[in-house]
Amino acid sequence: MSLSKEEVYRALEQLSDDDYQRIRYKARTYVRGLVNMSAEDLIQETFTALLGQDRIFPRDLPPAVVLMNAMHSEASNLRERETTGAINHFVDVSEIVSDDADEAAATGVFVIPRAEVTPERIISGQELFNQLMNSLANEPDLQDLAVAWGMEMTGQEAADSLGWDMKQYEAARKRLNRRLKDMKENEK
Image 1: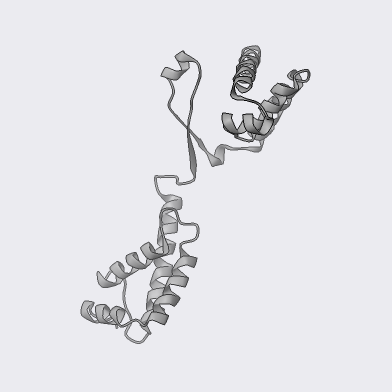
Image 2: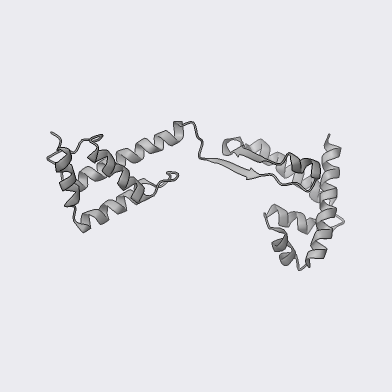
């Protein structure tokens, strides 16, 4: 038998501080792996579901136990919605920026789903990187810059780590961009 809305409200209102602390600890565990959901959000969602009579509140169980079970169920439902829903929360979205004026007009958002990062693409990327490094064998400064870019350093970070001023960095960047453009044209 379930409690009425007023009885649920009173039961939740009478939770002790220790019970509420235990509930918070459990909520932190349940929200791990959920996108855009904090422990407090989960507790609030569960309170709303219990007070709205969307979830039953059995008379014979302590309120803390009922709340923890309901939170577990809410988190499970949210996890299922994330995996089967229309929005894939595990997609990397990055902006493409180009120095080329023609490409700058076409600059937009580029989406690479993590599921599409396949071993074949990783190997292909490694082969291209090795090809680039081999073509730069006689230019150690460009090799160093390519490695810095591979480590996702910004221009200033790369210049600092290589001990260059920004003028040296810009000159090397332009030479490396020309080399990359030549490699891309030779691939076609």
